Image (cartoon, rainbow, N blue to C red; front, side, top):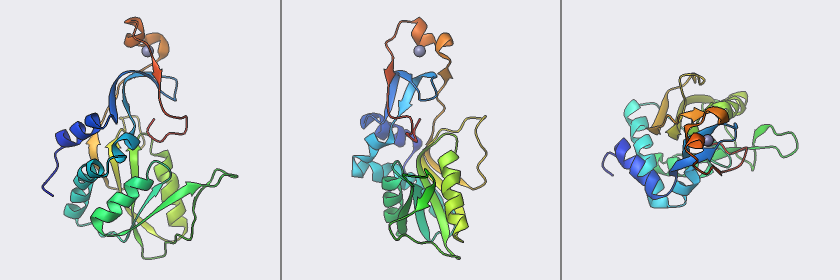
Length: 201
Ligand SMILES: [Zn+2]
């Protein structure tokens, strides 16, 4: 596959309705004129391949050696699968323990000392679930060598993650407190998307 531009990624996200313009209530309570739901992209395998090949290409160019790909469920399961396919590496995922809410490696998945892990996400905003996944794998003796995601939504205020980050697109969505929202002032109806625990929000 030839090199994929950020513009192509944006077009694929818009075409698949993963990237929306409107007036949205975020799980933080703030309002925004933009919204991304990567699952909308990932329901189309060919589009997912195009978008994530932009990430795979950057990782190959970096020369960083990877032995496994791992992402946190649910949002990153399909991202992990497709990145594993593109890089021809084992693809696994972490998930939350329903009782303790702690992130865990389950289902007989293993990592060991010497494993060099690429952590993947659908969208990275605060990096919280990313760093939880890092800890699970490092506690098991593996080394995290890089991060990959569809949408890098980190703003200047966000965590500076201590690994090289490879993304298909960088997005900076302005958000507003409800009483300062220009879309509210313009009388636009508001829509709530996703769930509170959705990684994309
Ligand atoms: Zn508003």
